[in-house]
Image (cartoon, rainbow, N blue to C red; front, side, top):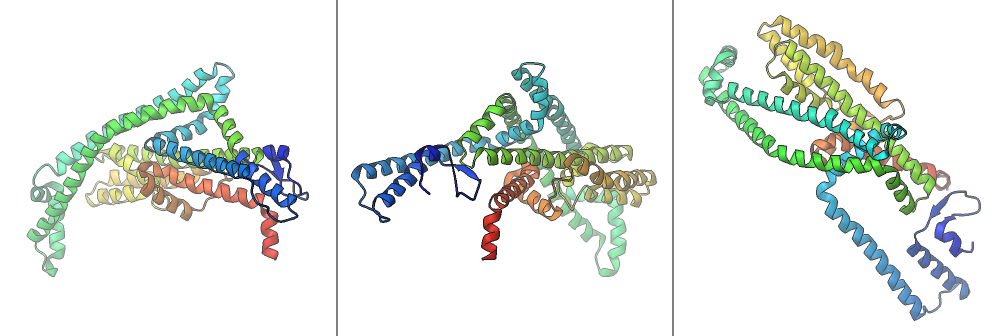
Length: 405
């Protein structure tokens, strides 16, 4: 097959029996055409390279080096803003269909501003409000259980009754109430230190959260306003071929919507219902417990039962039958089944990722990205699956031929 400059500048094919096409960047084109010319003009053998051609190769190599270096440097500069950038992209993908519908009735910038306002009023403001209540409840819990001396906390109120009951059970094994109180005092001291450090960290996190939220909203506005042009530009510069690139972007957007809605919406619903149940049962700090249930609901195979089940048994142990009935009734009858109802509706049946993979992706995402890993971890795995599917569909014939040979 003779290579043509005009065809290589746009697209080329891998053979007459294959209809696939792919774009070739200009530097790679020049290198390929020069090698082909050398081979053709010398009877199938490479001739001595002319100095002008050497200079051209140096120039092309320098261009590729500068291109890669500039992209890497730009990525390094943007790295501190990676989380606001990623969340702006996720919210833009979620809101893009709504903004497109609004843009038919109003200017595009106004529709983008409305979408940004939805995230601010419907997401960030309630989040800050709930976080403030949870912080107050955490301070109240600290003052109630840990503000006094450790041994005093272990000897007072309901905790002291539990210590006496345990001491009676453990007396045949030579464990006295004084020794048990001392050990519980050390545990209370460690818990107090952990909670106090958490409260201090929460106060320090507030400024960082507000700053990153402002950056995210700013980027979100422009993503919603100019998202179509950004996607068109990416399709133009990527060398995979427009048809494949559009398919990849479409699959990635659908996967992002499914993973985000299926993860966040279900966890928020379970945490909110659990918090209301704790409030109805008279459990202290219901908002704090609701946030904890939301946290664990984001982790597959664990779920919010790790919170509401022990609380329900504790209410039974102290004789609060009404509170225990409310907690167990809501936990078993609502929270445990809501995942089976909401997730198929929000995610659909097209996104079929096994729970063990989601579990590994979620925990790995938390370890890598922090709290954002709840969404980013499964999203990375979903994107990898999209790329593997794309590779398999594109090169299926070659893979089958290789397997047969």
